[in-house]
Structure formats: C-alpha cells, structure tokens
Length: 322
Image (tube, rainbow, N blue to C red; front, side, top):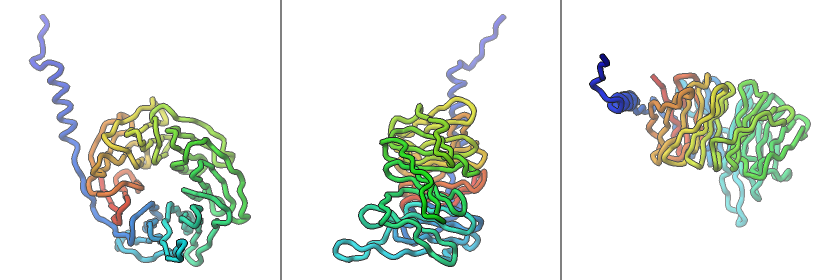
C-alpha cells in the first residue's frame, strides 16, 4: 500500500521558499567613515584606508581611530575663465607604502601620480595625451593602465616607457582587476565581454561572453572566479569550476565584490542602493546590507566576514557579517 503525503509538493516548495526568505536579514553598517568629499574609489592597506574623492584629494583614514590622519592633495585645474576647478580622483591603489592615483586634467586627459609618503610625483601628464580611467600597480616600477578607449598599457615608471600598448576592442573600457599575484588580470567593456589576460604579454587567455548583453560597470576577480555588474540588470557569475550563470536584479547593477575565498559575492541592488549577498556556488541570495543612499562605486572585502563599501557620497560604510 502506498501512503500519500498529506502535504502536496507545491506546499513543500512554498515552505522551503518561505524558510529561505525569512532566514535572510537586513544588516546595518557597524560604523561609517566620513570623507571630505564624494568617494570615487578606495583601497585598504593594513590599518589605513585610502579614499579617492571628487575634490582633488586622497583621504587617509586610520581604522583604529576611524579618523582622517592625512590627505594627499593636488592643485586645482583652471577653466577657460581661469576659475579653479577641483580635479576628480578616479582610481587609487597601494603597494609597498606607495599610493597610486589617477586624476582628471585639462582637455579631457588624465594625470597619474605616485606618492611615497615623502614626495608626490606626477608620472603621466597631459602632454602624453592619455585618457586613463584606471591605474593599478604591477610591481614597484610598473603600472597597468586602462584607457577609456580600451587600451591596456604596461608602463615602466623608472624609464617612462610603455612596455606595450594593446587595443582590446572598439567598445569603451570599464574596469580592470588584477589577480592575487598580479600575474593575470580581468578586463571588461561596454560590449559585455570579460577577458582574462596575461599581464606580462597582454595575451588573452579566456573570454567570457555568455552572461551579459550590455555594458559591464565593474568586475570582481578572485581565485579564478569572475563576477560582473551589468547595465542589463544582471550579475554575471563565471566560477573557476562549474557552469556560468547570472542573477537577475530589478535595477542596474553598478558594483560587485568577492570574498577572499570567492565563496561569497555581493552586488548593488535596487533603487535604494542596498548590497545583496549571495552564495557563489549556488546563486542563492542571502542577507542584505542596508545603509547607502547613492550609487555604489567600490566594495572591498577585508576577510570572509568584514567589508567596506562606498558610493557617490561622503560616507564609507563598514559591515560585519554573522
């Protein structure tokens, strides 16, 4: 004799869905850091956080006191009438006690700077006529530059020399993220494609193109796994092992991040600028991080349970996950 369950299958699935939904929570930030202007990018190095702002400064925070202890400030630009205009710091990076950042300059070009704690040097100026969007350290003397026109440039600062300039495609460049050892990099563009490239040679090792159909705003790249933030309201997920998939969002996805072991992902979600956590292996949504009011520009995991995030606002939020 077959005994039928008193609960039809659809009821069981509904209960499972409700239990999953009810277990997810809204988490508020543990604390906030207050920058002097809107935050465009940031990087954490030891017990210091370096925040690039839209008013020509890199604000340096001590994470113990949660206060600004130093500022790297560059001179204002001048408009055609000679009035001062604050340059925007577009990206910031740190390596071996040096701070690297890109600022807007005259005629739509960019300046690239390195500060070693004693001296601030302009590495690239407007005379080189480069429209650089991001700069990242490769080592003490070399930088990876990504231009708006999607050229990747390996630049030697000691010799002021381009080791190579590679034009990737006709689409506009959006983001570059280096691997943990700075041997490979993930790059993305308006086309929705992601390329994994060898840093030394610029050789394309892999192309991911199945999950986004429009502009990719930001990337995350850790342990061989890539996730994307798409204008098409998709979070593309390309695991190191397993099949690629995407998560549909109800609004443009501006920013993403991966935890150090690439098990937890996070993306900007909805018109209220929340952060949605998810399990990378399964795609299952988990807790939300609630507290931003502007478009997200950068998210950085410190470890598996702690992360910072910042957007086009003065607050940098710190989160601690259970």
